[in-house]
Each structure stands twice: as C-alpha cells, then as structure tokens.
Image (cartoon, rainbow, N blue to C red):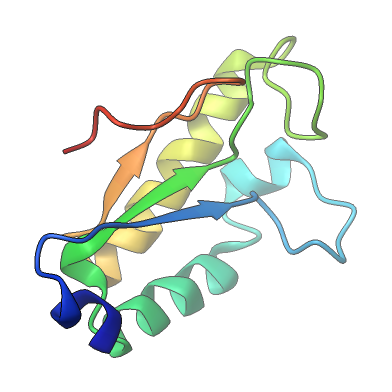
Length: 112
C-alpha cells in the first residue's frame, strides 16, 4: 500500500461489523460461520493490498452497550464465539492482522 509505505509504522484501524450491513444478521449465525465468506474476502483484500502487517481490526465495536444489534449485554458467550469465529477465519488467510477488543466509548490504542 502506498499509504503505508509513505510513512513506515503507520497502522490502519479498520472497524468491521459482524455481518454485511444489508443483512439482518445475528451473533448466533456469526458464531456458526454463516458470514465466514465475507470475513475471508476482507482478509484476502487486506492481504492483496499489502495491509496485513499494518492492520488492526476493531470487530463489532461497542459490543458492551445496547447501541448495536451485535450487543453482547445479554449474550456474552455468543458474542465471544462470534469474535473467535471472525478472528480464526481472518487469521487463516492473513495471520499477521491484529484485533482490537472495541468497547463502547473506548479509543483503541493498546494494540501497538
């Protein structure tokens, strides 16, 4: 990526929701691998664009609040399984990508 090579050490913080925005998705489907094709496509594209070494994915940000449909406030185990499914799927393609545990109202900066 020209953007990364222009300033070595740069990080791309990518926020990713658990399912495509045009779906009425849910965490159970995510946990079962129903959206893995989308996660694989994301990982393939980040790798193709040479962003694997510099990307941090903030998956299902704000999961600890009831703001989003992927809220874990009443389904923590299902959310954790969804997060693991996403992480394992992405890492199978692009193992150097890092992940951020994105709490509501928290700025990501501890992943460096």
